[in-house]
Image (cartoon, rainbow, N blue to C red; front, side):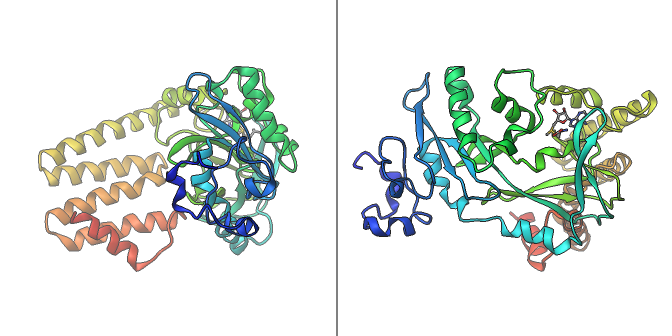
Length: 388
Ligand SMILES: C[S@@+](CC[C@H](N)C(=O)[O-])C[C@H]1O[C@@H](n2cnc3c(N)ncnc32)[C@H](O)[C@@H]1O
């Protein structure tokens, strides 16, 4: 194994073979198809990694790494041996915090997957759900380096995508997901393009597919969001306002706050044209919403200018107006950063009392929305950052 680069060698590579399987999780192995001949070599993966050199940069190798027991039905990761070795820790995190947050709240399942006219399937509440409640936990089943598909001949890429899926304990969970992509001829590629989220692994962009979360449709005024943890392959879906039985649960696939045209553009790469409540509202309503959203954007630019001109009073006044417009548009997830701006401005102006008040409001919004746990340390940490 002499060609294993030293970067990964912080780990005792000379541990006796008999102990390697125990040590493997805490100690990343750099494995690929050349060095991994026996299961003990490729542990914690459950299958021998199969690898291919990228066409344009032959020094880059992508392999299929599978652990068919992780999460719900296993996970396959197509990435470089270096990233796989560096990221092996994520297999240690079983996603308990996500599962527990759902179990803690739930008086039984809060949703069902049903047909939604014009949208394929979707997720609908089966009971009342309180804001900030977590209703669904899920694990990535397929993760693929963003550059992997374009770095190989098509047919070759499909071979690896299919191997990745076939090695899962239930390939149909992936193969039966929605496909709206008009970009390719391959089932797995279509499923990825229709359903995957971007996910940073080892500091590089990957696509990650969560089969259960994949059923949640997009809305431009969503009532839920996905909670990620950078250290695990688990996610959960958290609702951002109170929900009545029968209401559809929706998330946003694109950044919040865009105008109708900007949203439709951004959604094009997902292969569908949005028919959510906001996009199908009356012309007048869409126009009024677009007007406010454009105004929010220009006013935020003005806030930056006012700050640069040291005009704190103007910056605060403008930010309060931005908040009003955001309220009209139900853009609650964006409030906290506005409160934070105001907090910083008062803090810098030596009005620490008002600064602290707004800092707390910023945190409260995040807690309220289920993004943060409430703790006294959070406020201190935020206030400390104001002095940096
Ligand atoms: C991640 S999947 C969501 C679940 C999907 N409806 C299903 O049947 O499994 C994304 C696909 O759902 C449909 N979809 C999601 N949100 C939509 C929306 N707001 N308007 C229209 N179609 C939508 C589109 O076909 C899109 O390609």
